[in-house]
Image (cartoon, rainbow, N blue to C red):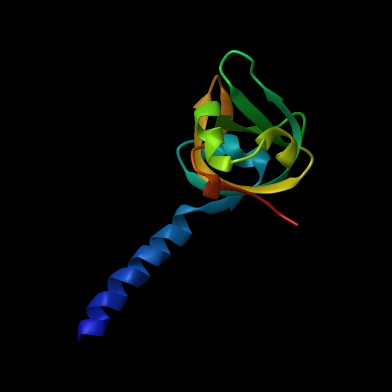
Length: 118
């Protein structure tokens, strides 16, 4: 009986987490504002804003892209220069799609939200 009480909530939590992260393509991000998603795409462009210390990665196509934002305050968590690490690499990103200046965007807050794929 005791095991059932522990296993049941764990299974419910796991099913929620798995459902919460829908895998989408970068071009579909605009249709998922407010949703928790996973995107696996190649970084097609990047730049670092001089005034705000924000690194921006673009994934998807040049016409329909998803912006991935890494703020300078959070970059210290990576213990490396993130800019050259991700450029031209296929990455997996998880997070909530936000609408910033009419563009779909995922703001990275922890290193676990972004990783390089092989």
